[in-house]
Structure formats: C-alpha cells, structure tokens
Length: 344
Image (spheres, rainbow, N blue to C red):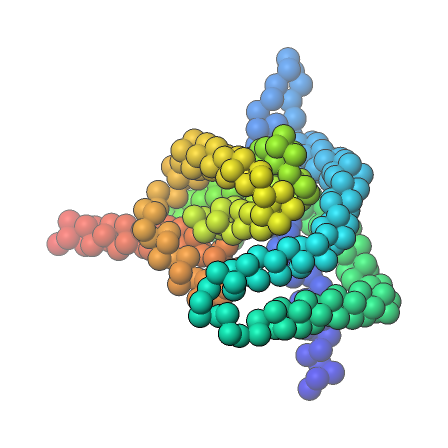
C-alpha cells in the first residue's frame, strides 16, 4: 500500500508548510485589509480585492527590502561568530581552568585533559559538518526547491485567503442545523478574532523586542548585536520564558568577547523587557486573552513537556480557543435550560 499512501504523504508534506505560513500571515494581515476597506476619499473607496492586493504587494516589498538590506549584515555577523569560535573555546577553557584552580574538590582531577578533548571533538564536528554540507549538493538543491515552491505558493494562497475570507463562515453555515446556526457562527467569528488578535499581537511584540534590543546592542557596541537582537525577538514569542532564553546567547557572547559590557547588556534587556511587559504586552495581548500569569506558566510547563518548543508557542492560543469554545457551549447549554424551564 506504500505506492498509494506515499503520494498522499508527499502532497500533505508539500502543501502543509505553505498552508501554515499562509494561515499565520492571514490572521496577521486581515486587520490591515479591513482597515484599508474603511478608507474613503470622496467617492473613491477600496474594496476587499484592492485592499488585499495593496497588502500583498507591500508585504512582498518589505520582504525583498529585508533580504537585500538585512541578509548581508546577518551573513557578516554569522561569519564573525564562526571565526570567533576558537577564541570562544579558548576563553571558555581559561574560565573552567580558573574555576578548577579555585575548587578544592576538582583539583586532583585531570579536567584540563577533558576540556582539550571536548574542544578537539567540537572542532572535528565543525569540520565534518562543513564538509558534509559542501558535499550534500542534492540536499541543498532539494531545500532550495522546497523554499522556492513555498515562496511562490504562499502569496497565492494568502491572496485568496484575504480576498475571500468573508465567504468562509457563510459557506460553512450552509451545512449547520438552523437551530444551532447562529450560535455556532458567533463562536467561529469569536475564535477567528481571538487567533487574529493573538498572532498580530505576538508579531508586534516580537518586532518591538527584536528591533529595540538590536538597537540597544548596537549603541553599546556589542559584537554581532543585530543577530543577538533578532534571536531575542524570536525567543520572545514564548511568554515569560522566552526573554530568558533570548538573553542567554547575548550574555555568553558578551562574557567571552566583551566582558566589560555585560552590565550594559543587562541594562538594555531590562529596559526593553520593562517597556514590553508593562506597556506592549498588557495592551496588545493581555486585554485580548485575559489569562492569569499563573495559568500561562502552568500551560507552558505542560505544553513544553508534551510538545517541546512548538507546544510552548502554540499552547497559549490553543488554550484561548478551547476556552472560547467551552464558554460558548456552556452559554448555549444554559440558554436551552432556561428555555425548557420557561416552557414548562
């Protein structure tokens, strides 16, 4: 049966990633399309198709601008990080050796031998990785092909999602029983609104943290500051835990390459996170989800244990949608109970 299911699996794997990316972008950009549709200059107004076209073209322009302006900078900084690997290893060895010298417990252990062996193993792994990477031409071609297909299909799927989004729920409603139609439609609209507000809020928050952290690192002259700032912004998608993950690479790089700037790195992170935690997050996401911080922490622990990093990212919106469903079902149940009681 492999000949039957293999093409189906291939089709799902090929179309799954573009659909996920398109869905994410849809919830992020749909509010912009709705905003453009409200613009009126005299008799001129923008319909949904026109608003969708403007948003798609603007998105492609921003992506191309980012590719041609940001990618060279990131490539340079990644190259600097790779070239500093021997220095980082040497500095790490000095720190470990000094710690061992101050420790009475480990003085009798030949830890220096283990450290050199670890450094040698890392160097061998790095050389093997680069060699395999250069030899894996087929894998590179396959990856480039997948990326190209995704880059072509995502704008097309996204365009039709944005253009016809107002038709999705009415189309579904045709298959619903008349008695439950309106409550289910209200539920679908509420679920869509919750997901949209959460995704757009997370994007705004991550962009804020990434941009201002990068600017702060650049102002204090931190090596590879833009790269470290982008890492901080991406990690910020995980509530509460993300900022600690995001600052870890910056602290490690600073302690090894520029230890005199460690205080300034902490100051930059504290300022950005204070503004984010007290202004950005409460007003953009907190008012939408209304989830207690303790609940979020418990959700992160459970989702992280079950599904790792993806679970920590998706656990909060999944809980928000599930809570919305439970609330609507509960309200419908009580509404039916009240109607039955009044009929009796």
